[in-house]
Every structure is written in C-alpha cells, then in structure tokens.
Length: 399
Image (cartoon, rainbow, N blue to C red; front, side, top):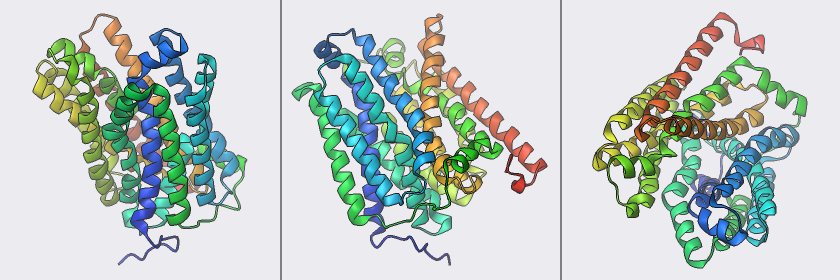
C-alpha cells in the first residue's frame, strides 16, 4: 500500500480547498471581463472591441510570468511562494478596480496575469507531493476544480454583481478571494522547501528537454480545439439553433459543468494510465468536437455537445502529471509552463475559429477546427513517443 509523502498535510482536503480557492479566484478574474466588456468600455470611454486588449494583456502576463517566476523563484519555499503569488494577484485586481484610464487598466490586467501560471504550477506540485504517487493526478484535478467552478459559478456570479454594482466591484471582490486564499494557504498548506539546488539556468533548461517540449506542444495545440468551439458557442447556437439571447449565460455554466466532470474523470484516468490517458482524451475531444459541428443546428443537442466539449479539460491533469514525470529537476518551470501553454491554446483556438467564420464558414465549423487541433495534438504526442523510444531518458535532450 502506498505511503503518504512526508509533505502530507494534516488536513489534506482543507489544503486542497485552499489551493482550489486560489484557482477559483484566478478563473473568475480571467473570465468575468468577457461578461463586463460593455460596462468597462463605457466607463473608461473606449470602444467595446478595445476591451479585448485587456483580455490579451492578461494572457500575455500568464505567458511571461510562468517562465520568469519559475526561473527566479524555484528556491523559495513553496508555501511562501504561493502566498506571494496570491498577494501580487490580489494587488493587480484591486488596482484594476481603482484605475480611471484604459491604458492603466490594460497594464494592470497584465500584472494580474503574471502569477497565474506559476500559481497553478506550484499548487499542482504541492498537491502532488502531499499524497501517494498513485494519487497525484487526482490531487491535481481537485486543485484544478477551482478553475472549473469559476466557469460555472464564479464568472457568472461576478458578472451579475458587476452589472448590478459596477464592474469595479467584480475585480475588487476577486482581490478579496485572493486575500482569503492567502490566509487559508498559511493555515492549511504544509511547509515544503523549495529546491535549494535550483537556478534560473537549470529551470530554463527544462525547455530544452524534448519530452517537456512535446508535452507543452500537445497542450498548446490539442487544448486549442476546446477553445475554438467554446469561444463561439453562444453565437453558434443563436444563429443555427435559434437560441434565445437570455440563454447565453447558461451556455457558460453548461460548459463549466462538463469541465468539472472531465476534470474528475481525466484525473482518475491519468492516475491509472499516466501516459495512455493523453491520447485517449485527445481522441475523445476530437470526436465530441466533430459532434458539435453536426449537433449545433438543434438547441438541445447543441447544449449537450457544449457540455461534452467541456469535458476536454480532462487533458489538464493528465498533462500536468506527465510533466512531473519528464521534467527532471526543473519541476517548477515545467508545471508552470503547462498553464502558459493552456493560454496559448486559448488564443490559438479562438483565433482560428474566428478566422474560419470570417471567411464565410457557418459558425459550427469551429467544431471542425477543434477536431483538427485535437488531431494535431495527437500527432505531436505520437511523434514524441516514437522519438522517446529511440533515445534513453537520460540523454537530457529527449528524456
């Protein structure tokens, strides 16, 4: 019977809840702006479309912050690092709620995005270290549930509160969630030393590992299909299935429910089949995204497939567990970069879906785009495994 790690928490579920609460705050901050674009635009006197720059700035902060913080802070004790990351996140969101000009707002959204990837990466390492090895992916999945719950509850609730009390209140409230997370981490997350042998050079060296790069590429491409469909699910169902405008917010919630199921099931599958889970989930994603292309002409089947597309989030815990196995000594960098790759997938999927529709395709063609990206992720995974079998893991370049 597996024995717990010496880093096990006295109250493991409360420790995981503390980390999941941080994910809930991050997810709410990331998605709520999509429901408050008009309010932000009106108040800061810019066009609604310009608010997209703030969304892009946040994503850029994630991509920049993940490798930078991981390289510089790998030696910091993990609990202290998590608290520090939440402090930066809290300040970024509270300052976002107080700014009075759009340029400052965009800059502060960049700041708020900086801790995103590093927090999720370090939280995954802490959760995995606190349980037996054969339960790592499930522990990571439970932490990642915070992000899924943010899609179902956090973003819609914050959007409603922002519409009622002003958009500034939504970001201020997210700052409050971050402060609560800091307190819970201090109380319930066990102390774990950082890696005293770590250095920026060694952490960045993870990016030279072919196995790490292949896993991150699977995330950046294979995950993109989910976002290609999700980003345009509301206009798709409105245009092709005559969905009433009032049902728009429920599409987000239905997608979020699917992501909760996918997160739990994907984590369990990854614990049982650490490598085999990845291609299985990619094939599943390919099939349900193809299904959305057909199902989107009818409201009930369209909503059903929105939920099924959401289950593609199952890829997250599987890839995170894979990175723990292949990253060697650069665990912090690899774990953090998984979430940077996730945001690249978000941008790639949404862009390709938009380009396809702008060129005259029907809205549901985003399902075909998604299936193509899932197939691309599967091809990268297959190629990476073939290369891996040709070289020993100790080579350092391939792993």
